[in-house]
Length: 340
Ligand SMILES: [Zn+2]
Ligand SMILES: [Zn+2]
Image (cartoon, rainbow, N blue to C red; front, side, top):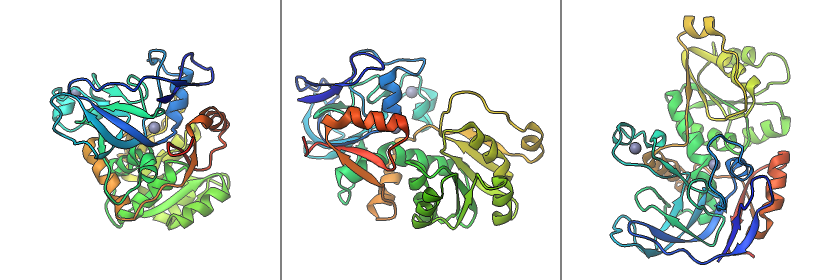
């Protein structure tokens, strides 16, 4: 099978011919149909983060495909099922976090395309207890961006605890933000989109945003407070920018919640007086649980959420990475394994 392999950090991936893996006990083999390309894949290939993957490895945590073989003892999926192998490849299943449906913070979690080989390959191994089950109405290429970008934005909005009829700000209208706007609308929320690019704000309007704020023109927190009558009940910061973090806290209504999902390098100054006196919650959110995954996919199967995608063959992966590094990917690139 063909796979795009990281042999050395910071070097182009090598598209190599590898042996199709055999599923061990409790594992499944999945024939990849499509795999989204996420910024995290670029960080993995560059070895940017403190805990580095072991070389060589195959990135990709938005791989969708058909189950073609079952290891011993597998009952949770059957051959022919369409599944996704996500970032949360597996967790221990018995720690306090796993037992309380917060498995994304399990200390023994494995990560697809990072600590386990991922979807930049014609076949991948998955854990049947943690794969995403793709609804029949969704194609592999439509589902791919949803199992990382989709679930991350959906869970982030849930974590704001904003209720139907209340306001949320979606800050950053990129890969996560354009999905976040659609999820928030489908959840019955009023949406104010914030970005520094008018083209992206036009796109936010098409995605259903009720109000738009260009953060380059004046104080965006003032603008949001005017629109929402005192600040948004929930704020989701998808922009990987420290300035956006600070603005996000300022946009949050009294007793509201500002959720962070992007990880720009550095630390951001927190306006402690405002946070304490206004009872504001600042919360990190990291992908989502299996239950969140099913919900995020269900909105898409109902036609309420659709990712913007650009299809590319696996052989184009290094060009795609160069463009990602330059910020030159307007929508989600999905590797399409029906093309060579
Ligand atoms: Zn991702
Ligand atoms: Zn656990």
